[in-house]
Length: 355
Image 1: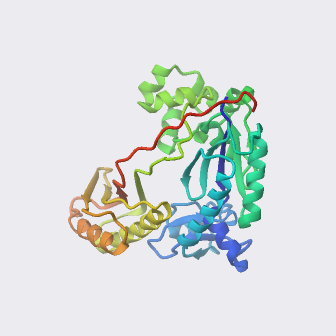
Image 2: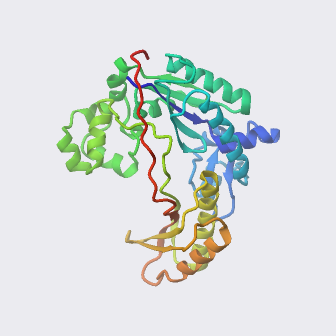
Image 3: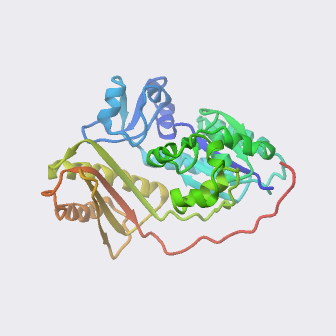
């Protein structure tokens, strides 16, 4: 039986800004840029009460929360704090799989403290994070990554939730289908159209039925509906690409405005590249037109991208080649990939029977 912990920092970027600037504490803030083509990177819980969410256009966020304060991101600070947190993780296990600066899986089946209780370890990690950084974290504890991740969302912010092995199936049955990892709005609607609203509803479908409805994802859904997830915690997890996109409230056909939006997306992606130490070399632009036709344009550079200016110069030239005469643009995206061809090494884990 494995013992998996999922740690999720609470509104990480916004919490760091509130920690470092007392005037922002208790106020609705968004990390990002407030201009017309800006995008929210993350929002404080005070702002989330108004419906402000990450990746939301700044104008939409302002309309939802008129008093919203925008704070420019400081990725170097976030990276530094993230390294402090990862150092805490390493005190307990070498099997740490970071998903981003503010989120990670830990396999503590066998741990450096020789402690048989994953719940105790999660409590101690959250305590140490707060003592070291002044920030709160939420944790989920269970027998696999799927259950641990959903559990970490159960008592946010600053909470801990444990899904015991004997309770796993009933816990999954009670979930709304939107809580399943990888189920977005489009998939959720398709599920609703087929009478699937909860984990219990999902469990009534055969594996063949789910594959027929949802393709390869159907296999994973079939297992998850039964609380099963066989994925290992991989400490050498490789980020294959970093991207960002925005959907306009009104379709755009002005090349200047689209280029400005692409610039902000590129800045955000480059910031995340620095966070993840991800020097990719393939630049991709995505365009979805008003009629939902989608095109992509990519260019691979001879050298890895380590500076924003040459990356943006290439992206800007690529944007000039996009045809805007056919349809106005509904969505624009920017991404960087092709960082490495290497694969992480799998590690063998011993198992304990205690949970």
